[in-house]
Length: 305
Image: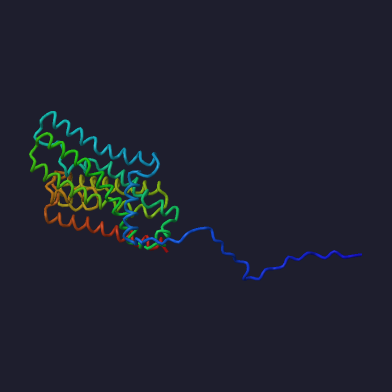
């Protein structure tokens, strides 16, 4: 009787186990645009994203709503000034951002995490650095995009005020000077708030945590500083009021513009820092901006490893 032999599958040599398949991709033969193009692309994409452009309708609602909320009071002030033939605007250009600081804080709290937290959550940061783009390029593009978005948010109502003042036939020289001072103030505010927001948002990949943390830092610091200033004023320690103002981004901007931009101060008693103290305010503000940039670079060097 014949014995059935088991079948043996021949084992392929180790070198024959690898196969290369041509799936039809073609090599790119065009120009290599380099770091500058990548940086500009990341900047424009991040700036558009700060207002929900190129994203879902849901993503557009909050930034566009905040933009409208920033501009509507300015339009109302302009209408009142034109209707009553007032000799001046109800609010100075340098004062408008301070009055609307709650809206500005909410904007940076919502958009700073949107700018960086998603890259951390979905671990796409190393993909950026796998191309000809460095850590500093990524940080500069994100920082510039958020600062530009905030400048648009804060400068647009000033433009509405300026156009309305000219329509009301207010003094052209005074209004132009005030408008220029207001632009300088909101430019510094945009850089400072963007840096603080991005540093906080870069710590966590959770967007909700980032929003809460940014709001907490901006709100608590402002509330604590104004409370301490009120206590110092009540106790007759007027000299301490100015130095306490260094510990909140809002009061820091307030001090800079009251010292150098001719703005009235919201400090107790309406007395802001003098020129000498204003120099300290400027140094602290610029130092915080530089520190925020440095912290972001070091943070993303670790993330990109």
